Image (tube, rainbow, N blue to C red):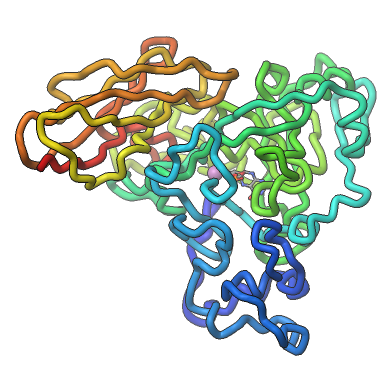
Amino acid sequence: MLEDNQPRQTGEDSESRNEQPASSARRSFLRTTGLSTLGAMVGMTIPFEGNMPFGVVPVMAQDSGEDLMSGKSGLTLLGDRPLNAETPAHLLDDDVTPYERMFVRMNGLVPQTALDQDAEGWTLAIDGEVETPLELSIDDLKSQFETVTNRLVIECGGNGRAFFNPGASGNQWTTGAVGCPEWTGVRLADVLNKAGIKDSAVYTAHYGNDPHLSGDPDKNPISRGVPIEKALEEGGMIAWEMNGEPIPAFHGFPLRLIVPGYPGSASQKYLTRIWIRDQVHDGAKMTGYSYRLPEHPVAPGTEVPESDMVIMTVMPVKSLITFPETGTEVATGEPTEVRGHAWAGNGDVQAMDVSIDFGQTWQKAELDPAPNLYSWQRWRADVTLPETGYYEVWARATDKDGVMQPPVVPGWNPRGYGNNMQHRIALVAT
Ligand SMILES: Nc1nc2c(c(=O)[nH]1)N[C@H]1C(S)=C(S)[C@@H](COP(=O)(O)O)O[C@H]1N2
Ligand SMILES: [Mo]
């Protein structure tokens, strides 16, 4: 079983998007376009849409993955079943990542409730090792707890996998499986404390209502958790809004968990239940090689026994150059602004440097403080390219413990997680 990612299906399965519950194709889920789903696939209204047989996909949409990504053009589609798409670095320049630029990582199918933006009767259960199990409606969350708004980074644990050598199976994310939207909801710790966490609590277990790719209702596409200490720490949220709007279908409508600083997989979308367990959670994609790293460093390509794999926790320090776009021509001998974002799974980034000579010398960049814990931080620097020709800008962030991004892929591991190598762009001085 391929646990982290399913390969994109080809050949006879190329029509498999029809297997999305067909009625989903009927309803408008893209509030941003105002078109029906089928209309969004072809980018225009389909006057006779009501006559189209159940499950039929418009011819014009059949070969173009981009059509599934309505409202997100400019993203790179890595697969359509499940739907996965990443964002080119120069499209991530916003301080707050807008919907259009937010990467999508689905392990299963987008649930019908999200496609329909139907939150009727939605409840969140908090149970297991708690004094008082809770069954909370969204209104209960809004009325019983303090509402907070925070910018929180979500980054897939496999971001950067494409650079591994030997390569690792799974989505070939380059640098764009990351974003920092603004989330509104309640603190995870407040909700857990209301339920009363027992001393026997060890780990959380997260559940959503998204169907497994097989359609088997007894299977979860993903159910991960975090150590109870992490869940009770500052930063975690149960959110119902992204960027001031109900959370869009691809990102977890109507409720999602955000556990910042941990791999994105800990941030369960379509959240229905948080089960507090007295042992480490063993749900879908918690075991085997999924989101696990070798306990001790291994040479690239080593076959690591399953028993030596440990759960990936805090994400490493990282940064992106979001401006200018790689390959841009700039004026020789004049200051050129480069800028981007930096973030770290253990909190604030303390320093940011850039190099224009392949890492021989570094210059300090200006680094803004984080607007809140676990937001990414804006950095900028002026670089001057001394003569005409080809240059690269390399960018390097340093976390609060003095740990810095390496120039090459660190810590090879079988599934290609945690690559925080320096981001590089090309600049041409003319
Ligand atoms: N219910 C549910 N939650 C999920 C997933 C999923 O497939 N189903 N994918 C996880 C993974 S692996 C990542 S990286 C993030 C991606 O969040 P996004 O699609 O909103 O960018 O969601 C996480 N939460
Ligand atoms: Mo992920």
